[in-house]
Image (cartoon, rainbow, N blue to C red; front, top):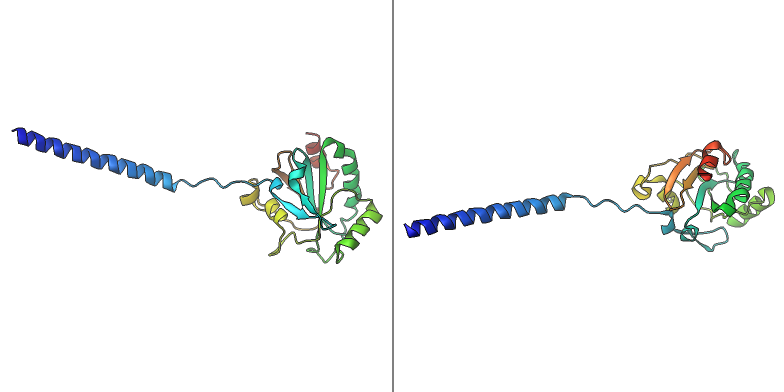
Length: 198
């Protein structure tokens, strides 16, 4: 009888141990299948060469609102440079920066080199806001900044398309993407001014 009882006790403990093992491995399996959320970048993670071939570090703009856009010197929207410069002069003391990315991706409407671009912008529109080095904003050679602006997997907000020159992206004071607007939305439009005054 005593041995029978010990036998039952042993069997009971073995079953219990098996259940615990199953429970632990089930928990482990649940844990292993849980996807780690992808880390969302901020604009501050990036550095780019400016039009004078110096490093432009976006981390230096922490706490500022930033308008980023792709520009071209020979486009129907090129006169927006005028409104952009006026906007920059009006809001720069309130912590607003405009950053232009000259690009030849749409209709071959940009000069060949940075010197010509800088000279054109200064002479014709008195541009003083930062301009970056000429680069691709779409396609296989798309620059890293525009990858961030157009891919939800990087910006955590939305996938966006750059369809033409002067597509605008608004970056909040914490370095996150707020919104994007197509070329026809002017720099002094209600949407942009409302955001600047928020």
